[in-house]
Structures are given as C-alpha cells and as structure tokens.
Image (cartoon, rainbow, N blue to C red; front, side, top):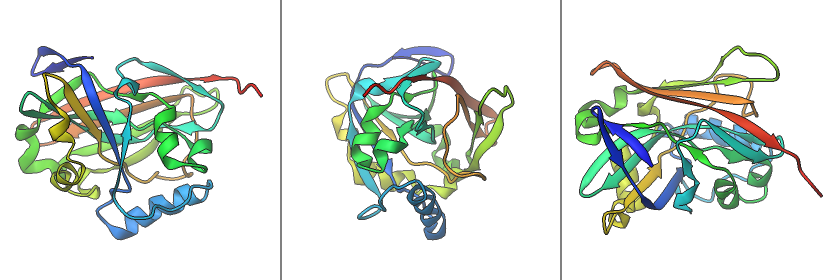
Amino acid sequence: MQFTVDGTALTLKFSHCTVAGWTGRNKAAIQHHIDELAAIGVTPPSSVPLYYRVASGILTGENRIEVVGPGTSGEIEPFLVAHDGTMYIGLASDHTDRDLEAHSVALSKQACLKPVAATLWRFDEVAGHLDQLEMRSWIREGNSDEWVLYQDGLVAAIRPLSDLIDGSKFVAAATDGKAAGMLCGTLGVVSGGVRPARAFKMELRDPVLNRVIAHEYDIIELPVIS
C-alpha cells in the first residue's frame, strides 16, 4: 500500500492486521455502543477489549468498496502501523457486515474491506496530545448528496492507545520488513443508530499541529444471490 509521511512516499506491505473491538474508555460510552449494536442483533462481547485477527489483505486505499447486500456500515477508527521499528498513526474505517455480525463478530470483521487513508503521521509527533485528536465521520444516505454527520468525538473516548498496543502485541508481528496494522476502536453514532449508507467520509484532525488526515469512499452494494 502507498502512504505519505511528512510529504515523503512510503510503500508498506502488511503481513498482520488486528481489529480491536469494544475499546471505549468510558464505561457508559462503551455500553452505548454495545446497546447500539444489540439493537441490530449483535451479541454483547464476552470481555472488553477484544482483539480480532483479520487477513492483512483486506486493508485498502481505494475510494470504493463492494459489499454483499444492504446490511453493512463503516466506523471511523485510529489506525496504528508498526514498521521497521517506527510507529505511525493514520485513519481507517472498520467497515462491517452487520447482518453477519449478528451471527459472529469475528466473521463480520473479515467480510468487508477496511478503507485506509493515504496519510500517516509519526506516532511520536502526537503521543503527547493523543487525547486531543478529533475524529469525525459523515455518511450519504439514499439518493441524497448531502453529507450527514455520523460520528463525532475525541480519541480520548477510546481506551489509551498504549494499552491497546500492549494488549494486542501487534508490534511484534512487524518483522522481515513487513508492516503490522491495528484498527483501534470507534465512537458511538451521533444520532439515528448504526445504519448503512452509500458513501462514508472520515477525518482525523490534530488541533495542536493543525493538520488533518481524511478519506472517503463509496459503498457499492452487490446483490444477495440465494
């Protein structure tokens, strides 16, 4: 995959990818997200957080993905990358098949591509103000071209990233020049509940260093053939 770091191109080949789930820092906030998903049939987790190993090939930098059926949706998440002894932070969407999630969260994590923004920041540049990083996502629904605010909050709402790094041990998987990545959990929906859309837009804003990582993608629905 092709990335840009401080204006310099960086090509990474991923050999490991983890999706961290149920990572809310505030118990009420994580319960809110659990309740959101329970409302669409998802069984509550056995413990929190959980680390789901997924195929590294599902990471994509493309601006469109194809999904089977109408029951999928995106989630904005910090994206950590380990490569050659350096840690980076970026932005990804844990796009998930909600119909399959009601049967198995682990399987649902594997069912859809995970769109990733093309910009990375060096982790040490933001480590001192991680909690101030702002996360927002928008969706386009139906035939409307209007972007509707979907998620809005701070990285502070997520369990400290250092805890997730230690708990997942994903850094140790970055060997032989290959990269390892981890999606780090999401925010609750602003209003209207978890739902599908035809396009998803997301941004990670650093108010201290005044910069933004952004990405958007279209969701192409393939027919369900039975």
